[in-house]
Length: 149
Image (spheres, one colour):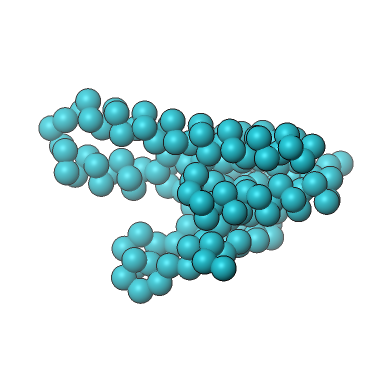
């Protein structure tokens, strides 16, 4: 049975670094990759608070995030194709940590790979840390690829 690795991406240069690392590891291990992009409800909630009377703008923000997700997942698929690694993609809508954990459990992955900016202080308190939540609650090993190296 082929092992399966879940990579969560947000399309940033930091998560692309994590995707690159994940694909390289999957190639060496002969693993399949599941790439996930989460349309963050936090982002949509912040938009809604500032534009409560503009539903059209909310829909545009949601559409923009979906497009960003599709682009991020295309990157993962392209890297997989270049390395001979099978990459299946998912887009979810919710809170990133929760959605990563949910998919990891549903798909019974052997490992989760996430990127991390190494946020600290006020920024960490305000937005939390997806990688920290995943590490604490994951049903399998988690590899955190630091983005600030």
